[in-house]
Image (cartoon, rainbow, N blue to C red):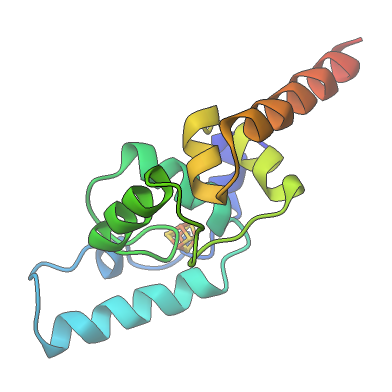
Length: 134
Ligand code: SF4
């Protein structure tokens, strides 16, 4: 799945983008906005792909069901060798994230697997592409 394809399946594609970018840092209105955005993400079929992308490329806004601060904590926890509490992914979802353009290191972090495992997923994706091109 290309980045264009997973974005076309996003649950937020028909939602006002401003919902995902609160203008203030805190307060009850912001909290409500964050919860509404997260509710959209919770039902999103491409949340894993979105989070893999956002961990490496998106500093602002709610994406992959996490706020920027939560994404930073998630990345730090994974970098420290911790297990992901927020996102668990299957091999299929990991391969989908790689097909969507996620870098191996980012996908490994997003799914809580070793880089070696994510490299294996990337090999699977390359092999499938070659079979498709043959
Ligand atoms: S996870 Fe959330 S921000 Fe990402 S594509 Fe899905 S709905 Fe949009």
